[in-house]
Length: 416
Image 1 (cartoon, rainbow, N blue to C red):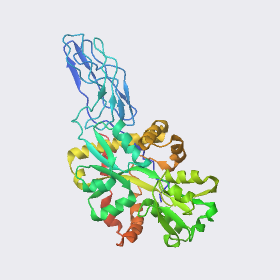
Image 2: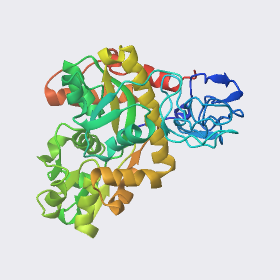
Image 3: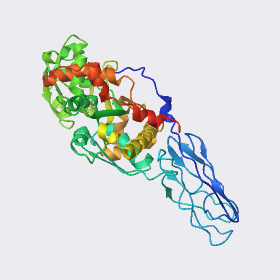
Image 4: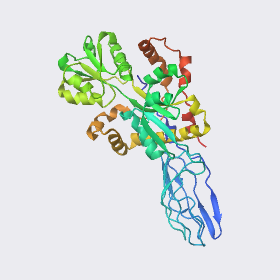
């Protein structure tokens, strides 16, 4: 499945602002400056006495994972006379080109000024064009996209249902997310598909019933396992069975859904189930002490990636927006890792999920804030299975290489 020693790319935390702030002067006093900031540094401001730029002063802000919290405001309305500057229209904490996150203003004004307030947009660049994103909105794996769009992206981004199938069939959609299994399936007919970043990685597990005669993984031989065919979960079954010299031909694969799998296990229709979370946990809870779990994190992990198309990435303005969104996604993933108490309520609300259930499965998800470095290795190995399922020949590494485009991630990580 995965390389558990995959490097934790520290650059993902280096969300660097990339514009020069204006140093505006006015009769009666110098306006404050708002410097650009890299992650963890301060955005500085200070208005001159009687300056015509209102709200430029105030306490320094901080840039936390790409979300600039600006103490100073951006240019306000011109003061009618020296010493009575109007309020700033809102803090400008964004980067040139819209690379930072949402900026919240509200710093104190300089002498003679009134405090600026409001929510800022970007500084030093044109507004970002809107982005349309599709995903599997019923899964935990999509939620970092939602949090990035709602809390860290300075432009407008909508996240709807559909995944990469919608991306490839609707030219108005800019980005789509799915597991690598679907990337392999869809890229055969759509060679313009590009994997540009990793949203979530999920560790799968097989949950079986002891009363069905399962006490070790090899006991699944001749028994029924419920999953969803042609998905990463079905691939996990195959990978796990091979660790005990079995294949999916040695078991009966039954179809189900995230909602029906727990019932199939509980009523004895199948001996085991596997899928993305939380369905396995629900199944485990249903049968209690009768449950036995099989998980080997070294065998496989689902890699849910963010995708675009070669055509969309070639459009300069869309590309600028996508780079900014990837920075926002890095910030969201950082919150998932370091402040789960802030992220979890967003997940439970988005999925209408019980908070206690999410707590049980949280350890099976990870958000490293990068395009996983072994993605091409995974694709080459997994395409053998996908090809066999669809009756085609597996592609070579050279044929699969164009599917992965790391240039957006590099631009998102690059210093100005």
